[in-house]
Image (cartoon, rainbow, N blue to C red; front, side, top):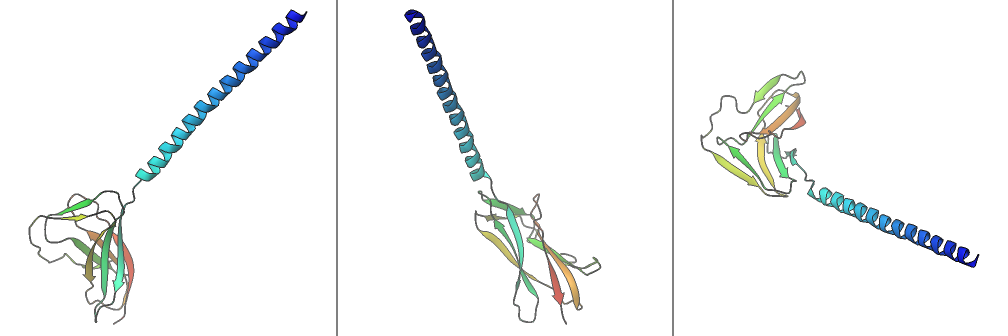
Length: 163
């Protein structure tokens, strides 16, 4: 009887020990996998880059309506724009009916020379936009980059003209 009880205790201890060891190893493995996934997620978050952000800002002009078009590099890499002429931006004005009343590039000539502009991380490219004299009213100003084979990075704003 003593032998039977001893054998039972040894078997129970062995089973309990094996079960605990398996759970510990299993939970360590799960924790290792989870912590690895957590590290991957944080690394991925670090790699996620911003975008090129276009914007329009009104600037005080002496008797003229002036805006500044800017495109800020919020990515983690330099961005190079290639232009096939001296024109780097274009813009149009639309009246409240949506009709185009002015396009800057219409009836203009530009130098035919390839040029590159590189915008480093955190920096921006800016250019002034001087609006033409138009009748009083509300207009939508749309400005975009004319880089070859790239997005046009449009920026829009509402403009009030009071003559």
